[in-house]
Image (cartoon, rainbow, N blue to C red; front, side, top):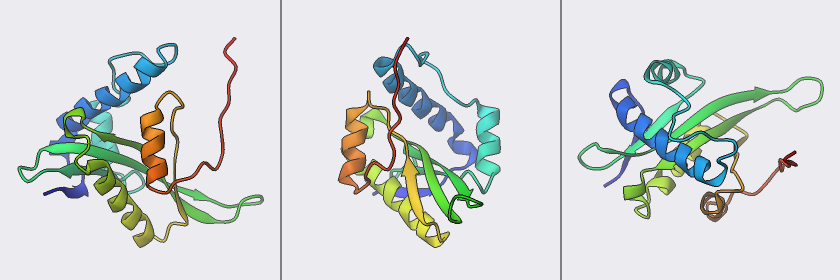
Length: 156
């Protein structure tokens, strides 16, 4: 049985392991941009992120409370002269442990984040996917997400 909950300090070692897996996917796809193996946060930075209501992090665990995946979110508030005021839940990262893929962990995390966003009155959920990660792109499309803007580059 899978359980999705807010991440706690005790989850930091497992989250750090997952962040290395995320980095390696990006490093393998774009070694010109991503160092490997690395994490984008250290334990102290994660502690602060977990305490911040504007950066909710969720973990999916099994019946033995082993962390199988995580979902990092950022609450974004827009509005002003050009944009209509609304709240977006930006999914900064969803990662499922390589050993737990295909067991519904990613779907459970996404569904939990979707319910969280609705509870918070968010207008939408957004995320970015690197084009070097077609598996993630297919996963998100299967969940019903559609592209809303495209980043482009020319390497010099």
